[in-house]
Image (cartoon, rainbow, N blue to C red; front, top):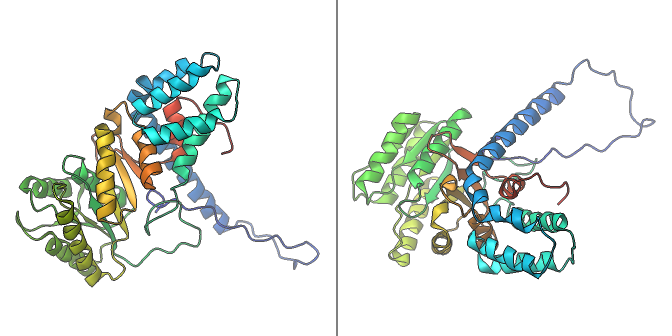
Length: 361
């Protein structure tokens, strides 16, 4: 799945010396090479589209706090440079610990030119995001060439507080999978709100995927059980399971999510393939508190950042990566079902700073 699982390049076959290689007639066309070329072209197209979507979503951030970086880098490097960098990054929700570490690392390089400081800052920001890129789940991230998908159906547990755009995230994920020819079943597991059940059913009708639901107040684990069972019976590829988003009592949250996981494991012994935490980018530092609560309650493997186009504080991405070691896999960038972009660290930082990054790290 090129949209959901970016794969590394295939390992190169060691070259055989000419005097040891058997004489083989050159084929007119190598179908494997043609297929690889098509895959590379499609991957490049998708990466370009994702970069453009992310760039558009970050326009408000560039114009606000991080947009002030242009002023900082247009002057000589002085003591004021470092104070201004700290102020701007903290104001953009990068987080105090992360900001202080990044600025200190760049400052220790003793750079004298503003462009060099900008490039060093970019390298540090990219490094924070790439440090958590390795897959924590079984479906998403820079998967190795030897990767083999787990047996179908793939199970994605979606968690997050109410109001973060969790149900919309499920609709967009379903749309993305369906664009790749996958059959999707969703579970209306947020049974504490009638509106949540209705909303996911509306998404199912709008996009064209099946929603398994019970009435308000039903046991979320029972809904998850029915959804997995239905997916197996209908030969579906993916099950997207919505969950309740209440954080009033962390112990209850942990008990509820643990029960859902146990029920899934009755059907699929390996359990969920991904646990996706949906965070609202506009909530800033409150989003970090949510991340902390869910990371302690359930084994989160990936993050989707929604409403990125509605905030001037996109720096929360770095705080999530640095403080919790969680990779952001997707960003929501608009209102349509197609407004979902895979997250690319270098493209994100380039968009944030408003210029291409130098090659290398």
